[in-house]
Amino acid sequence: MIYFETGSRIDRLVSDMRRHFKTQGRAHLPWRRTRDPYKVLVSEVMLQQTQVERVIPFYKNFLREFPNAQRLAEAELSRVLTAWQGLGYNRRAKYLHGAAKEVVEKWHGKFPRTAAEIESLPGVGPYTARAVAAFAFNSPEVFIETNIRTVFLQHCFASRRTKVSDKEILLLVAEAFKRSKMEPREFYAALMDYGAHLKRSGMKLNAKSKHYAKQSKFEGSARQLRGHILKLLLQKPHTERSLVQQTGRSSADVRAALADLQKEKMITKQGSLFIIAA
Image (tube, rainbow, N blue to C red):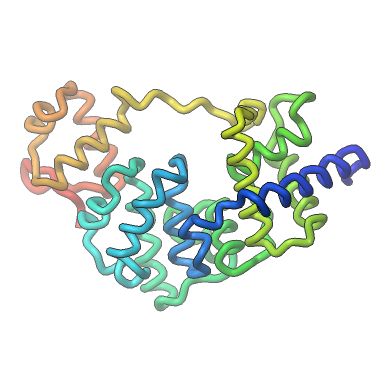
């Protein structure tokens, strides 16, 4: 049940969101100009933990090389990872490659339409599946991500509480969607744009979320080492010893990174050489 005070806050939220979207909405974003579910999925995967402006050139270049699921599914993983270089979190490229293969093989090239079907694709979680369903198919989904969370923390919880659960916020997202009387793709575009605006304005509220976790330092991390190893292997095969020399990291660190990459099926070993998986 939405009490009167909360209802009035949501009405204000919707009003402010609409006003911002009308005057400062990000209609220039290339993924806003398509309803192709494959292209929407590419954008959503790229946008995970990556700033919008960094994603734009990668998104355009990636789609020039892999304009549809069929072309991506047919490509070697090494080619996909090469196109992804510089964007980080290389597992996302692996998952996207796997999702394209499943669309082609299981769905016979026809992209699944429901959130549940989309979520069955490799590496696609609840948020991504619902975002694709909303933006590609205008499906009335209810979901949350960091910008959406910021909007509701600011309007409904800013001065009152910490440790706010996403379950609480999702109820408010559903109510705001109902009150807005907007189409799903327009509602979520407006909500995300407004949240991004609040963040740029200095609203650092996600620490109030029960699900907040401070991002670990990248420099010197295992993630940095895995990325470095993949970059080297995209150039040519390497032995463990040469990877230790090239990365400047300890044998133990390199061995652990190689084990992780093999477990994720990003790389494989042929004799003494490590190579990108087929």
